[in-house]
Amino acid sequence: REEIQIKVDKVLKEFNLEKYRKRSPLNLSGGESKKIAIASIICRDPEILVFDEPTLGQDAKEIRFFVKLIHNELKKGKTIIIVTHSIEFTIEHSPRTVLMSKGRIIADGPTKNILTNEFLVENSSLIMPQIYQLRIELQKIGIDVPKEVVKEQEMINFLNNYLENKTTTIPEGRL
Figure 1: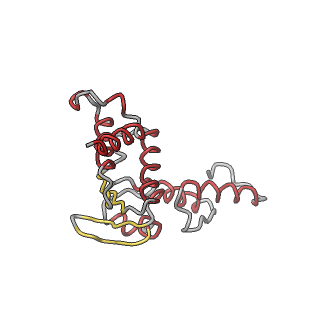
Figure 2 (figure 1 turned 90 degrees about the vertical axis):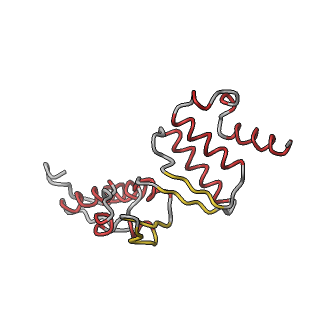
């Protein structure tokens, strides 16, 4: 019993949830309820963690907290499965993606390969990642962005490098 209480106290502190200890679950917001649900799972210390749309309804601060949490759990050797429709989140934080459509697996492999494949994304009813859409627009004005550039920071680095090394300017009205 004491061991359980110690674990609960530790997770409540880690998740900044001490103030909710005596509050009724019926009086919590959706985001607070989601955070408490995740904390209760972490208390049990499972080997496999499954999250269904964990970033839905979360603000940027909560999403950063969740990202830190999953990276910490991965460092502990845990298996993490995230069910999400957020392509941008997946590209940034998942090395492997299993893409499904109508209850069937249509692709399984490195996230970069799957979520930048226009055919796969269209056949799964997802929207192409914004970075991919930006790549298409840049190609229209003659800037060839390598296919490997799929993350936000990779695009920023590519564009900074491109602009530093480019001596000509983009024609007015083309950008």
